[in-house]
Image: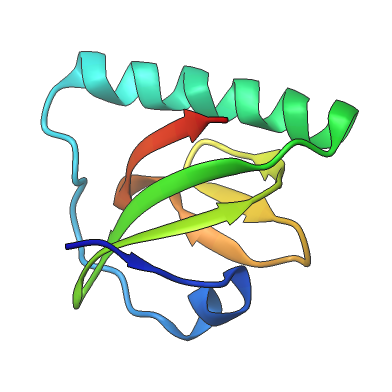
Length: 92
């Protein structure tokens, strides 16, 4: 079961080492989805649903992506989270 969390709580979570996605192709798709979320967030203030894993299990946050680097993303409000914990990005 996935717990829905607010973006404000993410900075207090602990993330596991390693990537939640095993295949290189899956990681490439995730990065492309994050880049799309970045354009939607910066250009249109559009929120996306990010499914991710912390040390306690799977969670979902609905937020705006403001920045994407090779290893982390920054959400609205300055919250930073590692890309390696992100399982999926979905668009409404």
